[in-house]
Amino acid sequence: MSGAAAAPRATEAERARLNALFAELCAIPSESGDEAAVRAHVVALLERAGYGCSVDAAGNVLTRWSDGPGGGRAGAEARGSVLLCAHLDTVPHGATPIAPVLVDDGWENANDAILGADNKAAVAVMLLAAERAAAEASGWDGPDIELLLTVEEETALAGAKRFDVSQLRSPFGYVYDHATPIGEIVVASPTYYRLEAEFRGRAAHAGIRPEDGRNAIVAAARAIAAMRIGRLDDETTANIGHIVGGRANATNIVADRCTILAETRSLDSAKVEAVVAEMVDHCHDAANEPACECDLDVTVERLFEGYRHKPSSPAVLVAERALEACGYAPSHIVSGGAADGNAFEVGGFHTVCLANGTERNHEPTERVSVAALEGMLDVTYALLDVVAAG
Image (cartoon, rainbow, N blue to C red):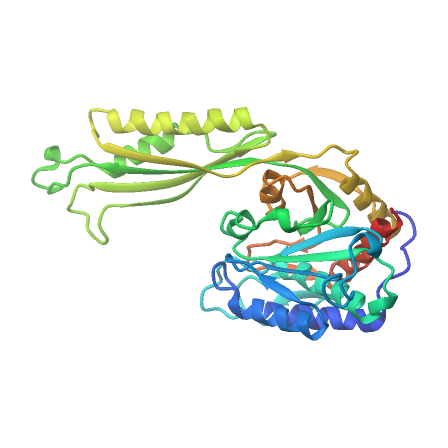
């Protein structure tokens, strides 16, 4: 925070409603690809408030104040328009249920698994903003709110990639999806490549005829050992995420199969392309070594493209003004991850990702403080005010 704390923009009743709704949403399982229950829940809430919701073929939900409680008013008559976007899915947590509890003024899962604040903290905040606009109905003097709730964000932005951005009427939008302190504005995000390499050797008895075999695990291991892994520079990272090979519980067979999954990402597209090419070369070199002599299939896929926002872009400037109005010091950051905005930028729709104060996303110790949850509701109300003021 900067200077004296700003007066809350949300009422006590809205804050209580926000916390209750957040816990309610987190308790509904919604792993990527299995969001139907939570989607039905939020659609019911929106329809109860007077909104009409459309669900596309991917399962993304889109609604607008002007098409529902706004009585069909055009966005221009509603003093501008802005997109608010959050994703409904979470990373897997297996059979462990999510039981949100308050611990030391913050929300945590009582069980040993994720909380789901990524991204249900944002979903709850945006639903509250929609409910306020609906409650004020014809007296609403804010902008038209376009609310988009996506699916399968955690699986390489699959839902957002399938969303048709030409439906949007707003000039720009915001995604709240960065687990760092409120005030941080993501102005750059990396391009990301995924690599899958399958090494195919020859099976043989490991004790009687090992020389007749060609060990695919050894080939994969040599490829990995030659790769540069971790943080390669300030803009570039690489990682081996998974390796599987051989046959379960069998040590007496020379492994004839081994597959590795890897990734690399960078804020510099030329760098990331060079690194993924280097990783592919190491796989081929290892497969061609006389001690291995494996066949090799390599698949490389660019899962999302990076972007860089100008500090002077209208969406960034609006975010700065809203944050300052709530007592936060805006700062520009670069991210090593991606959010739905990456997909929208490729489609030509300008989106800014804002940090929303969640902590340790994708970890069993994930949490969000009540102060951060309520703080982002105030920031949202301030964003709407700034957009309406032009």
